[in-house]
Image 1 (cartoon, rainbow, N blue to C red):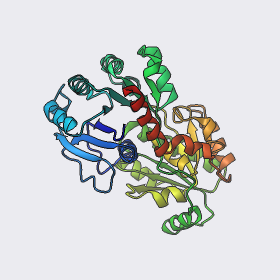
Image 2 (image 1 turned 135 degrees about the horizontal axis):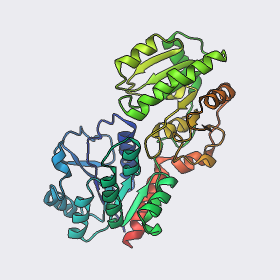
Image 3 (image 1 turned 135 degrees about the vertical axis):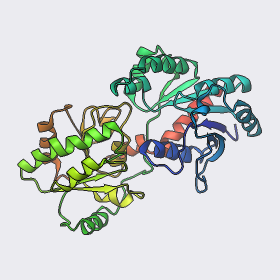
Length: 374
């Protein structure tokens, strides 16, 4: 097969990316588009895809109407036929009925990418309608020719609870654009230290995420109320940085009244920030799937101290001594671990990039789709 043509259904705005989830979709398709002709069927509120390897057909309106089964099916069919589509790729289960209809009409296979077990995420968030999502998610996965999961735990959960055939369950992780340890940590840290007016030798601890999302809100509260007081009691010298959009005024005020912590707000270009920091704190206690911020941190050769839930989905064996996991809600253990590693020199192994580099991940996904067609 000389040219593989893929129709990808992405049900919401991803350009410009404003969250780790959006960035993961953009990065995956950018690498996938280097290997095949990737046409994204997306929403009308996306900005230009110039500079990316994929193209976007702005078919869906940015309203809930797009989730209706078979919505805009004729337009998608026309696009697929014009591009001689070989397969269909669908992010999340929400557009699965449209993908199923498209697959039947064109006679080509379709694949779903599960970013997490949505029903379990909604259950842990206390959503009363999670059983409905469990039925819907299980049904749509059973109809797909293949399902791409981002964590080994999700693969096993779906096989057990949704009774999926193991042959259609594939581990296709979240990734990083970095294929090796980046250079420039010392320079980046010096820039951050100057901006913060602190010594270059001060260890920089950080938490990064969408701060209007409940799991991340709680993580910030744990850092301020549980972890930092324990670190301060130990007499540890450090600077804590909280970054991301949407932090409540209440938490911003608490940060202003607390020593050794700064709220950095939304950082549009993260390279200097991620390169310059030393240790990521990841005290996340709810939510499903892999914590994208942890993959990102490890890719930048950061030491990550995480709760067990926060580290769910990561493969510790490829993270070397950069990943440190403590029991959930055991804040003494968390603070003790930070104290132990705060002066350690990070050294992420090459096996991490072999597993989590987007180029390798997308090559695997494309090979699975090609083999299904053959």
